Length: 285
Image (cartoon, rainbow, N blue to C red; front, side, top):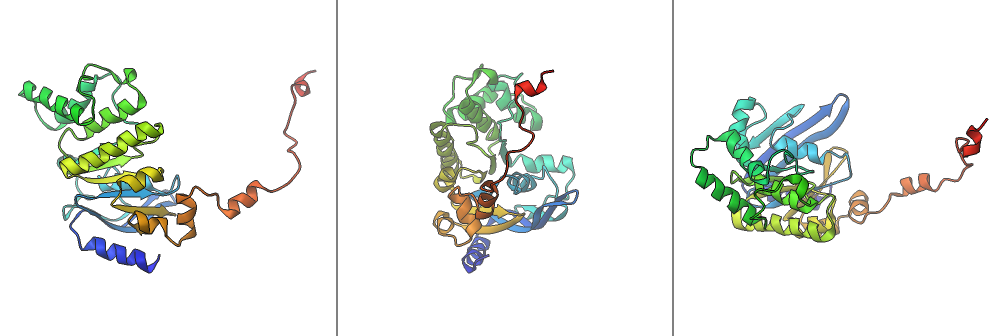
């Protein structure tokens, strides 16, 4: 890791950390997905996590809300350790979080209204239904979908489903929103709508955001800070300009969408056509 990365990390530690991971390791069997990661997430800022598929990005943010528990290490929210809490104790902590799942994870059998009310029903007993309806209206208005209360997910486009899922994620007025690949599967225009909503929520609700993405255009637009994971470790950490000019070849290959020389060599290897190439007549008697 470069000297600049260490400087960036030191700078981040000087600000108030709403989430902190201390020496977190996660193993699935013998496979190490996160390898002794220590990380502070600064309050009120947007941190973007990038890296190749399978590098542990989603695993990392699931540790921040303790949907996964570390094999080793500790996780803190507002200076209180949370990875050792019971599920009942975690339910209270999780009311401070909103989570936008990669596919939206809306309940197909529930209307848009009832999807947004779902977290409210899980954590509170609703006695004032008029206020509950106002909440649904307000959250949908924030994502530009007021009037869609009676629709069902199957009647919505991919971009609309993501926006409804985001409205649900902010139903409890969270302090932290975790976004798992929020623009995946969307065209460039719909992707930019999501980017604008991420910026809007940070600006208007003063939330702390953590965004996992492969989309570098999105990363550069929304990020105050970008972290890159590779082989279970943080190999780059800084603002957009720092990442664009990072000297690590793996960082440059990823942000520029370049195949490595080793992979190219394998792809370009010459050789005979496999004997497993058949024609339809080969199966005729």
